[in-house]
Length: 269
Image (cartoon, rainbow, N blue to C red; front, side):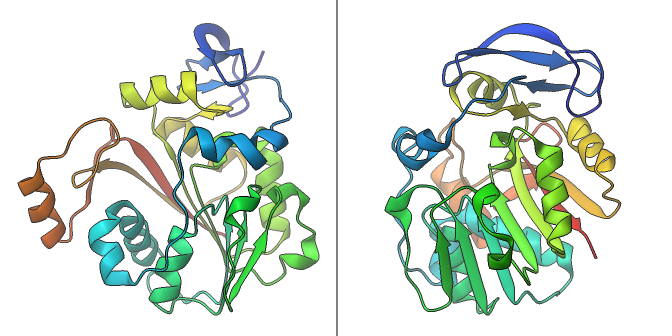
């Protein structure tokens, strides 16, 4: 078996993924884990996935409320604005947009003309004047429905895609200007074990393997940041005073190479 990131030899591990019922393989050279054979998950994503991981329904919001009540979502917005240096986006596509949180924030901030969400679960079929919703997988969306996309965003989706190289090829063929995504960071032990054992993730990235993946696919202009939350945390309780003070200072996350998440912005222009 060879690594889909760096083509080095990979070795089987004892990490058995309960969703796929398959062992993960490890690449020592680029520090990444992988499921090596694909499984049809279309029915699972259309029905079971959102039940298993308890995604809340979309609620209309405005940016100030989002800033305080959804710090992770707002921090993604801050990262996007910082790394694109004031670039305006007219047509945004979100893959795996689910409950519409990021659309809600971008719309409230007046950051785009139109927004498309690709989400296979029909229970999140949102309706809004400037929103187009596709209840299908990204690979199934006709190309004529994706013309003119300036920016693709996807949060915790890339690790679910088996053939990542084919995905990147399609993104480039569409003429997209920017790709913004977030994945779990296996530098954190709790994230690594959760990702390897309990989620339908084909790939599990470190910062080094993510860089190798982007380089292999011909991307030359990108920014990667490893994020450690300070106002929210999926595995532990954040002290209330610390949470409030950090929010007031506009600091929801800090850079940390062993942080929970890896966030990347690719410039394809």
